[in-house]
Length: 317
Length: 274
Image (cartoon, rainbow over all chains, first blue to last red):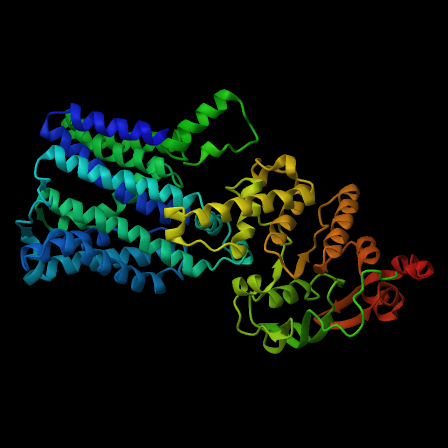
């Protein structure tokens, strides 16, 4: 049902909208959805924070950028390379980092994110440094070209819907329950026979992977990338999408990504007061709906239907 | 008390603790403790606060290593095995301060216990092969069966932490049973329960024992301990003070002066050990 609504909305927007600006904005929503859904698996479900996911986003973008621009690889083999590289990096980072928890994990991942940013900026022979990497080709599959805003919109949303679909299946499984168990009580989780250390590493890799795919799609959308698109603030924005949308809710991640992408654009009507209004909206959401948009709205709905003391299967999405 | 569920003599112990010591800083929490738990027994671990009972449970589940000595399970050494590995070997536990999964329903809490008995990985979960669907269905029916067993079927869809306190204890037991343990370690299962709940706990523990699962329980409720246990081990200041049947322990002078007191000893069951 939810998928029907989502797919119908995507189709309606893709077919109905004609302004390239609007299509591109919604394409960004799709890319951010990938990032938020991935980070939500780690943060919302397994309860492990990452303040460095922009580095994986950048890794995906720069891998495909460097390979297609400097080495004339086809984008799709570059995607495969980006995936392999990200998995390896994420494993190596996760092994030492995920033995940390709480603030320390936050600091550790923050450090990793900064290392990523410095590498993108300083390895200028490959990345072009501050002046960026230009001329990343458009994507195509055989005769299908994704150079128009409309076709790219559909491509990105195909990835986004697929990721929502797969992650939701993962959550509604033995693995998903184990992740939530780690979040609730790591001690009890391991007393149920869950290898918490290993599972945390695996979910970190999965979320890094989704960020890298997002970076790949971003690079081929804008054809020009520079380090500032992958700095600390981008990591923070990803975290904000997850928190605003609602932790431990895949559909919340979609909502958070949508709001956090569209809101800054619509707030430009406030000119110089834009950031103030933006900040105020964030504060109000967090005060009124501390569980995030998705859970908050659901709670209000369930409260109205007066079913206290029960968790309905629909309350986690 | 007589011991009807007792395994015939000669069966090897399911759990062996062999001269185990553990100190935290300068405090000797456990000093050269040895004992064996026979299959099919309800084995109780009693002693004053700070005697080292919970420390001993944590050593058996592998939460921290012993300074010296070894723990064997089914004849094999456990040293170096991580807590989660011991669960799949057949050691399950409950906690003194209940540790349910707060975001989950009662049923989901028990389903987490099926983790070691199910096997699908990331790809299996995403692709949802027919094998995975079947596994999930089986896990669900097993979990419902266990809820029935502890008497919580009607609360399956409730949030675990919204249950009344006593029911939360029963849920924790169901969750531990879902791992299909050979031995179940219970850390003060009766604490916080009213007399009615304690009585149904005693019934449940005997039901569990009769299903073939060995029990090792840490408990302060002497009536419960003396009523259901086959053997009792008494710890005091990290040392083994006494071990034996409930009658022997209750008659033991050292135990009376260190822990039970005259009153409890006065009720000594030995009169009833007809």
